[in-house]
Length: 400
Image 1 (tube, rainbow, N blue to C red):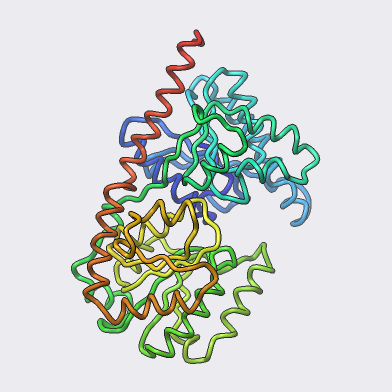
Image 2 (tube, rainbow, N blue to C red):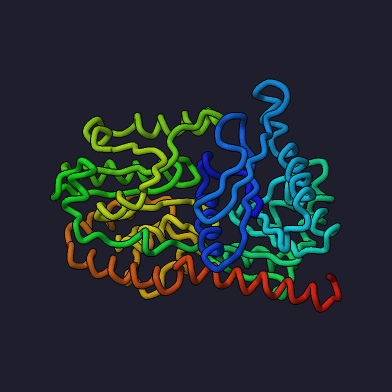
């Protein structure tokens, strides 16, 4: 597995790679995650949690600006060297998201004649049209390599449609959703005790959001909706679970602070900024409603995590994602509202708070849907089948 941003640096897809690696390891697969790091941020090698993690230091020269510029190229070179040093151990290379290591990993795979899989993770970042239209001076070469993978995985129909539209053969493309550990993310019967442990009164309405507090995730829409919700339900609290510090992105930090500053004082005082948490599931289990007005996603794992906790979800519509996650029966296992509509988001949430039985029914159906379609063990089985197919094709070509 090759992914540039992985623990200890937060990324939603990094969490997914770790979950998938653990599930594959339970089936006897020897998984190594290759990732980038800064000096001293984490051990260079770590074994545990179901896989081996090898972290390559990529801030080797220059000041902060130069190190950021060279971060991805350095990772590409160091990843290629690391792969070659362990070449006899590697049967399949699986790259998650576009970064410079995709191209050197492809060269390694061709030299060693092992299959390489590329996983499309976010529209507007690593779909074919975005890669082809990149302003990078080597964009034509990069796109040529991008089009020559042995297999592609799209984590949503939206990304699969983009790949097919660009001419990637359906024979080389599979749609495999991201998965959730439904044993970790599950409803809690002792919600009152859990709330007490987290410092929230039993009967206070709790609304939760899980994800980075950035414009792409619709944090401005969420907070506008929250002002309306709090005006109607003054005892309610909003739990913001996810990255809320952006040391290397001052514009993102300023955007977030502007949205928070725009809240009425009472509503602002009822917002709990919890940051990145290892126990995010506990806040979902304690909440009453999950809100997710994201503008753009690759899949939307946070939605499925909330569903697995039995939490009714109110989600902004993203064609090819929201209609893929939910069953399609209106409001049966989740409520979908229009994009850029804080009033609709707020009114749907208020409706669930006012009708707890309806919220319970939707949450139970959401849990069933998550278990049936998105359990991480089911997802891992599909990846195993893909790897086996690619290895069988290699054997059929007479590659030892």
